[in-house]
Length: 259
Length: 254
Image (cartoon, rainbow over all chains, first blue to last red; front, side, top):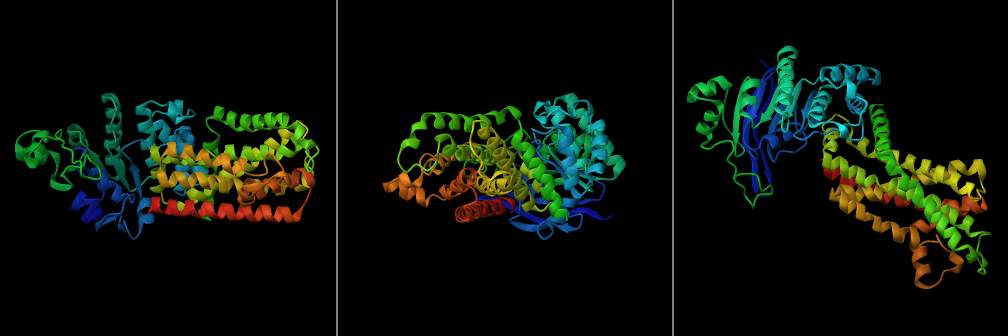
């Protein structure tokens, strides 16, 4: 099976702090893969490097066969990245946000409008599509943000904490959509989360990441079987602490990066 | 072709961003008119000073209203870009497979067009008050081109501050450049009536020459030596601010 993502010895430092240490992993095409770890573990930093928003300090990665440092434009053309915060134009409506992204990814405006219409219906945003995004609720913004990264039907979808800040029903809506997307379209999905239930429900394979390193990876069911408990128990077993435990390092460039 | 297409769509977005929310446009129109009405009323008798170079103070000050309109319409560029940086929208653009320079060029063109259109509206308003427009329709494209070039350059100043600092408050405090750049010029009195260090600074201030270009078109007609100087200075001014913006943008987008 071809690999959608191949990472070799990827490292990223911020000043004296190392956020991502010598990370190596692969994600086969079509897999729903997750990084599970606490805040400051290096999840977002890894994802931003793979999405070409951050240069690695050392190491390499191929995304859809393209090197993230040598061919960033090719990487960007084939991925969608839903970032940790919603990244929409607040003073534009849903149509304007989506159509602009569609044309920037190479679609003709007419086709971008058609695609936007489909996605707005899917995300149940048609009724509010002409309102400015700044007036949307958190859940609506999240759904629109997801629609935005799907406009160009990417081969790989990066989702950084996609349900952060949503209420339980909002999370369910997103989960159901993502599960269906992974199953039906063959899109490779790489998700980061610190929610155990999210990783358990969505991911075919999970890598537990802590202090910038992958501690263990496997299917959620296999990890739970190893410890004869829940994913939470698996996390504690393999890392030695709960996912809620965080310490700060005041010397780090980012004080919430743990060392 | 893709590059031009991307510039076009980002130009559209940049223009839309600069006019929303719509009620924020009010100060951009009211402030220049207010400066114009107050100054032209307050300094009416200045025309009695021997050597004054216009028939009425209103006529003399009218080009400054156009200038102020350009300042106010393009002065928010830095804040808009800072907002894109803080909301993460810039990352959204960076993660797309576009030519990153199209982001900068599209935005600057949008602000140039905003400057020209604001200038045109202000010209209509001051003419309603009785200000002359010596060159007429034939000279209008020249006036708008000068407004566009200078508008892009002035937008570049805010953009520089925004891209280097990524802080909307610091960008807002860049308004401090507005006062010396506008006031220490021939905005209030002709060069012939200025003396001492003030006159020296006015002569050094590049904005003086651009303002004189506007004044020439409105009051006196096609004075080609004045216009050539105005365009040269506007292009150089814009070149400096836009080059600095490009350097800052390149650092950011690496």
